[in-house]
Length: 461
Image (cartoon, rainbow, N blue to C red; front, side):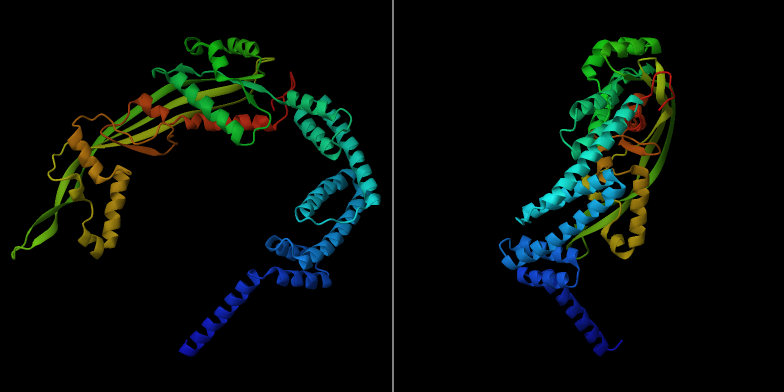
């Protein structure tokens, strides 16, 4: 491509960019003019939006206000005609379109656009909404009597939207919600392992996590019994020996509809040790042959010991209907957690910061090698840095484990936590995998929240 072609291409791109910029920065008068032009072509929606943009920039612009009023009147007429046409075939669908029309009129109010009243349409709209309210109300009553209170709740709410004071719709909404809302008690899981205090700590964390997700993830028909009331009814000493019949009776005493019961069992641990030699570079500052100060990096090695521990513990839980003691949902699985520890007893001279994995000359001359060295280190040592390891070896000679994970950090299956010193004992390690229980538990509760209550003697939801 020659220089003339390049210059021509750049000029065209510049002109296009400038045109786009001018259009995007069009003033209120220009936008009002564009609105009038679009209306003349029959592009009513475009005309409305152009005028709206103009008024957002200059609310008192008379030309834009006139253009928007003209387009809004036309749109209102079209939508009123549409609603009347739909009503001939489907009263409820027409009423829903009528609700959407309310939003359009509310939008006009924000722009202070006032259209002349239409008493004829107002009468038709009122009749449509009243008829639709009656239709969905009667269907909701049938749903409530058929044991589908969640569907009935939505139906009664829609009837209220159509006609706020329709019959006893407010009372019906409360009734349907009360029937649809299962009150759930989360009982401490039985601890059938050798890990002490496992059940109480899991219960505390799981309750807080489940309660948070019920609030934040779209649960509409689930109420969790207060944790303190549950602990008063189920002392931890009793939790490990709680039988299903006892748990059901406790649920009735708590006044809940469902209880969650479960257990932990079958802990398995596997621990392996290893070692590797890590090349490192030590920064030295000395004098060269001419007596000038120089900085150079000398390669050395550090022997690093490793230890890996894998822990698994099985769990199962059930959601039980306290009315008849039947399990309505449940799950079973295995918690898995893996830890990797690095440790060195090597004594090193100089400051911690004088050591590095990649010296500046290799960084510049062989970037691929530098990346490979860092990747190998991360694979073996996680996000711990070389100075961290050296500082740890100086500070403490024992292999007590050191963690940088926060209390709420959760280890997921097939993930690995990396520690300095030693790996955590099996009890601490299993606690890092708690989320593997409460995540499926939340999914189970969410599925139940979406389904209708099971009728006594009926199938599971």
